[in-house]
Length: 50
Image 1 (cartoon, rainbow, N blue to C red):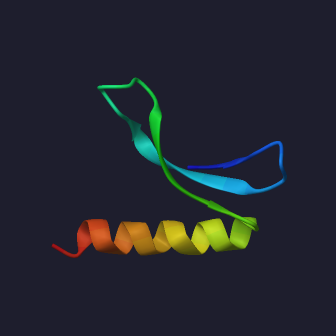
Image 2: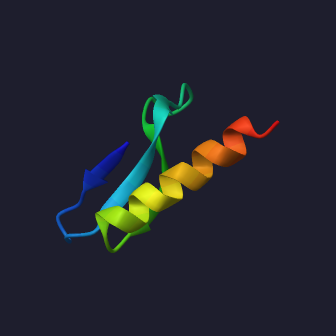
């Protein structure tokens, strides 16, 4: 899940809400949306690779 910040950067959040904090986990902040999407694909790859 990618959100645009006030600063103009993009932050990648986890899809699931962290039960301990009730918020989504920050998975990184990136200067462009394309960079955030690229990292999101990498995260999904490592989650699924077993």
